[in-house]
Picture (cartoon, each protein chain N blue to C red):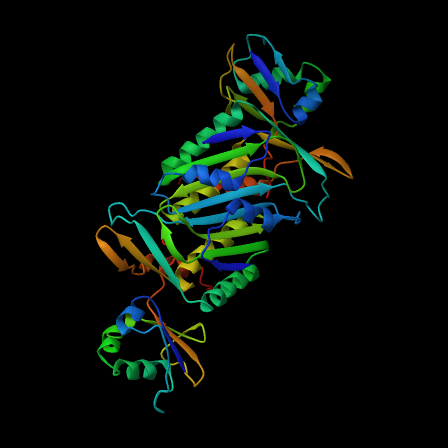
Length: 85
Length: 85
Length: 150
Length: 150
């Protein structure tokens, strides 16, 4: 499973991209985030407020109940802030 | 008083621009149009349907009751048809 | 700013000129009107736009001032051509710059709707079936009426 | 058509390319987003737009197909820049061509509203008071929500 981090999620975790193999209990977005949170202080800080975190699975926006599978590309990022006029 | 005609009002009257001195009874747009209508067959044809005629007095849109005075620039034209997309 | 001219215009260059040096501008909304073929209605080869010199500038100026009063705009430009135009030629440019995109969109649409009912232009179309003065459309009056103040 | 690029774009040339040879086009509505100074909030020197390559193109493509399905459009273009941008630089171009001006205005505004809530871009602003990641605005979600189908 490939994980990508953007904007301040990249800054706080210190990671842009990584390959991971989560434990068997990780089957959806919510359980993935819960597991990531326990990986260390950087992750705990980055994921402290999940209302400020968006998740994409295979480049589409995903919700907590959406499934994650080996081989998926999962991205974590804050709400988007493109051109603001 | 200067009269201007545009689009098919110019075609039907055969006049683009003229200087006129209407009789004393002509004091507003409505009486001016009534008087013009009697000036000949071209004018009668051009002004047969007044719902298709717009009038401007000194380059502002005017209504039948608006006053006309010596020295005014009066224009007669059909409803405008600028860019139509 | 208002311009009534026979020559074509360059929308990219107009955008540069309109926004140059104003760092409060966050969005620019433009409308470019083009001579199109009314397929299904009647084919068109070319057309001539007649206008009323003097009144055109006066009316466009009034409409522009109205837009500047109703929305927080940084800059505004209307360029309207007259004379003979062929299929695909640009007719009109309306360009509105603001800090806020909503103001720019609303003001641009307001200007385009009003242009079509207030600016003294008349179209004379030439096609294979002959030539004729184009008649006004009730839908244009309806489009302008949606901006009437209540 | 979708383009995500570091380089600037020329709105005039894009207009030419988008409309060339299509005589059904009667109106083109464009939005150009520009890096502006948020006077009163915090001054800005420059910013960097980070994006998610691949997802950006996918999301822009979906939004564009949605617009083409909802309105009778002749052509559509979205160009979005990324990387470091200075005050006054162009960020994004949305250009929509149609036979009918109402469709072009509606579709362009729809695209701009959705871009700001769906396209994976993040702004990192640099100013005299330091640098920071810009936070999302609730007003952008509200703007996109007005297009939700009922």
